Length: 132
Image 1 (cartoon, one colour):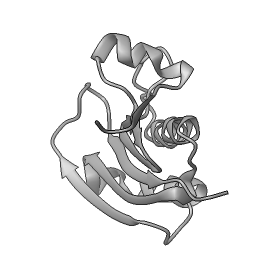
Image 2: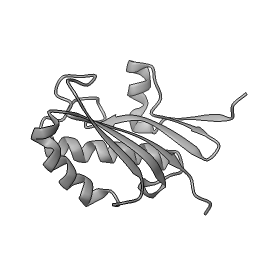
Image 3: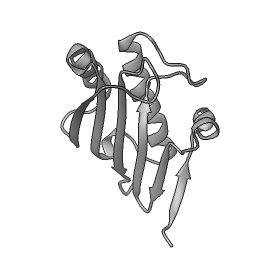
């Protein structure tokens, strides 16, 4: 049997109720985070691209912290982008403000759509808790 812990930050409990998945699962020191998007706590998609990107990073950090990790613990990250050419400069600008550079593997994938209309990015990652 795998030793695993379901990670559900309090503000993200509506996701479990509505969509039936958890924001992250921790197995040992490894945290597997489901893709995080730019929506409010009441699951409304944020219209402004910059604010949506900020919220996606904030939501990811919330999940990481609930699992005992931080951005610095991420070892692998995949971002999924709708209209990547149109929004990548702004996404990168926001990323550079909030996320440490050069600490993890990162793959960007352009997609035609995400789970809900209006979503522009989804950030999925794997983090490994460091000994403190």
